Image 1: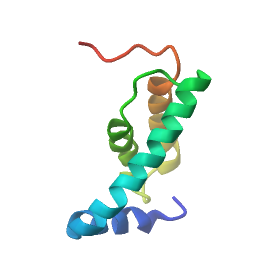
Image 2: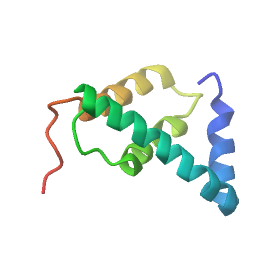
Image 3: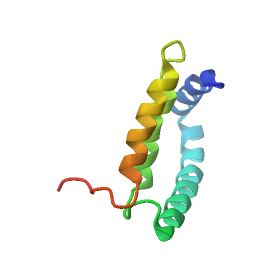
Length: 94
């Protein structure tokens, strides 16, 4: 929340400048893929996570209103996300 204005700037940059979004998307997904793979191999997160899905889910942090009770809300939402990523968590229903 220290950089609350960053969410709006990122949103504007990625929705109004398609080339910028296209240029940054690949490196971000690549880095996230490496982090997920390393943690999967270490047994700290569940197997088979899609980096596109994880990035989309993380987007909720950018949208929490900094004028609200953001800290407790961010803590709750991050806990939900981490519970879903942890090793041993049930996979999606098929």
